Image (tube, rainbow, N blue to C red; front, side):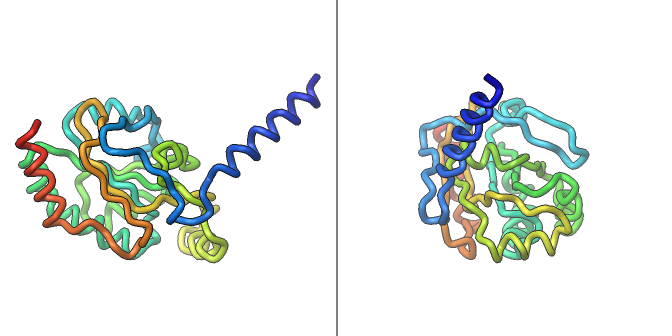
Length: 199
C-alpha cells in the first residue's frame, strides 16, 4: 500500500511540475475581476502572515518581483518607495512579494529605504496560483544562487502589478513577460486616481 501511495504522489508531483510554463510568454495570469488566492507569506523575520488579512486593511498595490538580485526589480522597488506618499495619500497600501528567501528581504528594504511591506512567497506557491510563474532558466538559476548565496528558486514570476480592493478582487493588472519593461510610476498613479473615483 505504501509503495502505491508513493507512486501516486510521484505522479501527482510530476503532473504539477509539468504545468509550470517553461517561458514567461506562456503564463496564464488571473484576470481583472478575479480574486487573489488565499495565501501565507513570510515577513522579514520569517513569520507567517495571511495575505488576505493584509489586503483587507485597505486597497492594495500588489507587486510581484523576481528578487532583490534583479536590477530591474530594484529600480521598480526604488521608484515605488519614492512614490509611496502619493500612493498612500490616494488611500492605497503597497505590498511587494518575491520568491526570495525571507533572509534576503531585509537587504532589499534597506537598500531602497522602503517603508512599505515586502514579503517572501515560499516555494513560489502564490506566484503559481496567480498564474504568473514560469520555470527558472538554467543560467538564471546559477546567477541567482551566486548572488543570493542560497538555493535558487525553481519558479520565477513574470514581474506584475495588481491593484486590489479590500476583498482581494483584481481591479487592474499590468503583466509583461519582458522583465526589462515595468509599469511606470506616472501611469500607476493615474490608474490609482481613476480607480479611486469608482470605489
